Every structure is written in C-alpha cells, then in structure tokens.
Length: 371
Image (cartoon, rainbow, N blue to C red; front, top):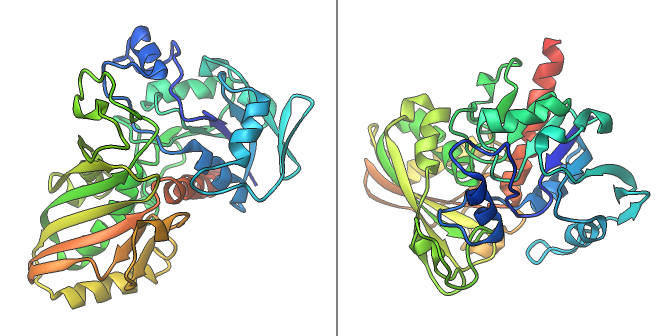
C-alpha cells in the first residue's frame, strides 16, 4: 500500500514564502483573498482527489495539510459534496486526527510546506494540490519534510509531465517532482495519441467547453489581467486561455507545435468537453476513425482511460466518470477524409483525480522495482 499525503484540503491558494518566484507575497495574499489582479492558477477539486484516493485500492492517505481548515470543518467538507453527493463511508475526528472509514489520517496546519513533517506521518508520496506550488523548486520543499516524491496536480513549467495511457513509460525513478498535467490535457492527449498513431495529425485546434471551477467569481469582480475572467461565472459563457493543447506536445513529442487551443468557461457545476478539429495526413472516413477509437478504448493500454459511447448523451451523464476521456461517436463530424471534428467528454473533477491516484500507484511500483 502506497502511503500518500495531500497538501491542500480545500479549494484555496494559501500564501507562503515558498511560492513560485514570479509571485510576490502580496499577490499570493490577493489570490487567496479573492481580489487578485491576475488570473489565478487553475484548480481541480481536491475534494474529489481525497475521495478517489480513499477508494483507490493501491493507496492509503495517511496525512493532509491545510492551515485554514479545522478538523470539524474537514469532516463536513469530506462528508458532503454538492456535485458528487454525500460520502458513503464514515468520517469522524478523534484525538486530533481525521478518521475516514476507520483509518487515521494525521492533520497538519502548516502555512509553509517546508515545515510539514510528512515522514512523521509515514507519508512518502505527496500530492501538491494547492494550485500554487507548480514548479520543481516550489513543490520540492515537500522533500524537506521527508517526502520521497511529489506529484503536482496541475501543469508545470519545468517538472516532467505524465499522462496515464500516453507516456508513463518515460518515467524514471530518479525523478523527484513530476506533474499529472491538467484535466483537459488528460482528456485530449489519449484521443490525440490514438488519432496520431493511426492517421498522423498534421495540425489541430482544440476548444474545451469547461465547467465552472473554484477560481472563478460568483459575481462580477476585479480581475485586472484577465478582464473576462472577472465576470460572474453563473451568468456568462466566458472565453479563456488554456495551455492544455500545447501541453500535449510535452507528453507526445511528435505533436509538439501542431496543436493549440482555447477554452469557454460555462455555468455548469462539473463535466467538460473537448472539441478537437484536426487535419490528418492519412485519409479516413469518420466511420473508420470511430472504429479505431473504439478498438483503442478496449485495449489494455487505454481501457479505463479512454472511453467510447454512441449514446445520445449530455454533460450530466458523465458526473463521476472515472475515464480521462470519453469519446462521443455521435457528436463528431467530418468535412472530408482529412478534416475532422472529434468530441470527447471528461469529468474534470473525478476523472482527473483518479488519474492522479493511478499515476502515484504506477510510479510507486516502478520505484519499488528500482530499489
């Protein structure tokens, strides 16, 4: 059983001296307080991560750190979820620890992650889930507390990025800090890999129609560097930038420079959808492309990661889906045999969180074999 620690219990961005170098302390305070002058980093739901880690057969959460949430509130946050429903197990506190399904979890309240004594709690693999510490240097402070490895649950500018079903074979035991990329990259990359492997992508544009996240504003508010991002999430469809498509080039080098994209933030609670328009070198009918994707979704490499459906589905049908990407065969279209639109759904909270857990389980096995 892999012993896991999680930094960040709630959806927030804590100020700390070990933040990325490009953010001044006052900017971090602004990010946390919700009056930021810049666009905050994208956060996935760490609550979904905690539930997935508890459910995952290969992992055991032994410690969490959050300086802003007390134990009683942790119980409440874990027990209730507006999107994914009430937790079906037991959650309680006893003698200063959090107990989930009867198993004790040590709770730290350190503002500076360098002071978290992960080793004292037995935590070896740490998930950096705050959304702030996304560089190797910033996330690396967890190693000071005895952590063996750190997995950043966000894209990273310099840490090696891995996407399950796409490039796990590139992982090396000497890596200390790695990134699980973003939820959108985890949706796009498996689909792009299948298309590129079979038909060769010449170039492509991606749009993600993305559900609301914790970084958005409930009503209009100041957002000086991203004016549109300051508009109320519930009232608007908001165009936004995303590096998810370009990041595919980091996990599939042959696609580097061939993909880019954008996002539309929409007023839904969960589940997003990728729209990939691409030109392919090897011509194929849409029916042939569907057949290739269906076969790939059933392969050992992608089963449980890339899904396939021909049903007349809508977004809420995928709440709680564990796949990274579910190809919607009925939604795509082709202009001709070399120019196609492909549509794939993803639960940007739950599916991504399961991949974080799968990545930890995978690297732990590789590390164990290397010892």
